[in-house]
Image (cartoon, rainbow, N blue to C red; front, side):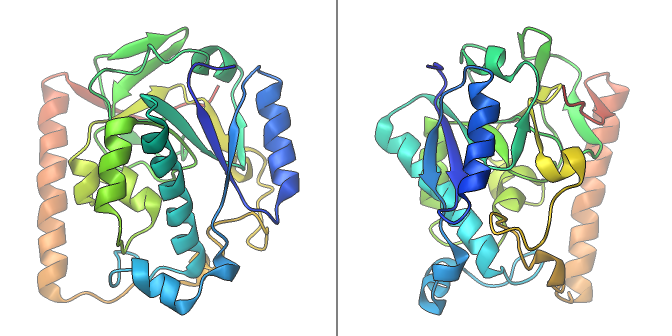
Length: 266
């Protein structure tokens, strides 16, 4: 049994995905607990209205995106209720790297000030601290200073889980937008780290086998969303905010404190 609890989100109507994930984790000696995902097909308009607070950055949330967010909240609530200090949250389409079993068999590598540690990659450049905060075997943990899409594999602390549950009773953006993009005020209020090389990669990135019609997918219908038009004032404000963030990144690079990299998966 791993000392770092692992919660895997899985839809009742996608047992084959659970079996595949179970086989991958079992091969590395990792035990996990299934968390029944909230099913978008069973969400009523009233359910959605109860949780969704307006239009988000990428537009109004689809039922699948709402269900995905609520599924992650179920994991956070379980972490708080169980009183565990840290836990890994996985979506059921992740593929573990060769060292996942070794790394997740212990939790002493999690930086003491961490709220989140992202365990996956999206194959896009990110800004990382040059100084390593922790190490476990060949894997380093560094502070993450930029957006890093997706929320399919991460470690969350109990204190962060408690705070996230309280702050996301109502939401308007996708769960990965809230957790891992610098546009998010919640993201900017947390200390977020990145494992490098990453321990997990989503299967569709690994072998390009994903499908929009996959019954286990949380983000069905996302491709059809239309980004809302913004007023000139809003666009200028966002451009200024991004400009300030870019300036800070450049200053930190010149001081030798940060660097940009595409995190590897191993």
